[in-house]
Image 1: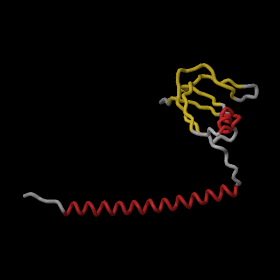
Image 2: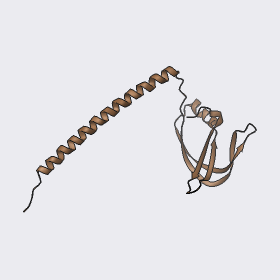
Image 3: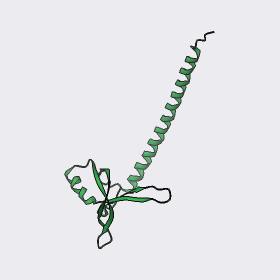
Image 4: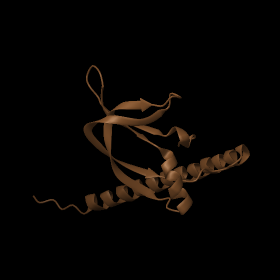
Amino acid sequence: DIADRSAGLQIELWERGQFWDKLLGLCHLRLDQYDEQLNTGLSGVNERWITLDAELILNRQGQVARTCHPTGHSILICTHIELPSDLTEEESKEIGEKLEILHDILDKEGRQLQDITFDELNSISSIHNDQRVSFS
């Protein structure tokens, strides 16, 4: 979730090392480009390959403007755009409480199903144990 779309999104790809990590590349996505998709109703999943760069270029206000100097690395990103929710704090709290109740119900049903499954497996294994034939 990104609160300020004007700031954009910075993607970094790092290689984890034993003693230190190495930056393989980075990319800055301008999110104001996605406003057109929202306005035209094209708010779906968007996949694309992005070439990573080695350096960030800042504007006069100190914000990231773009990147430069390609590193030769690329990554496939999948973006999904949703309109922000304008819920009040009270509505958000109510939805959170309902989700907790739903989670509890699903958790209890899952445990009941798990108990039934174990009971069925035990009864099946006892049937197979009774049907064993011994050759002497």
